Image (cartoon, rainbow, N blue to C red):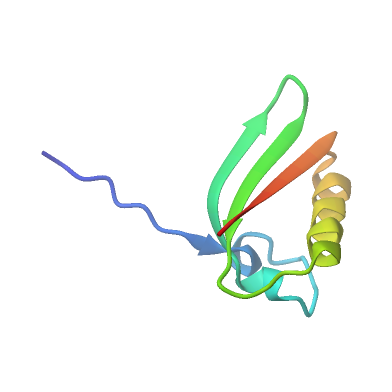
Length: 78
């Protein structure tokens, strides 16, 4: 029986052109879902450091503008 090896990547690795001094860059992406019909991106992230609400808002704004998503939903997994 084979096992599927999964690896998590940090936001700074996936979205390397996003620049900020926030802890959000060190958060790991746990899941990503693109709903094509409604052009929505769902992103689940994990961080052991506190991420401020405004930093989540700026990151959502970046994703909407950079990739032309109608909406971005970020879930912070604790």
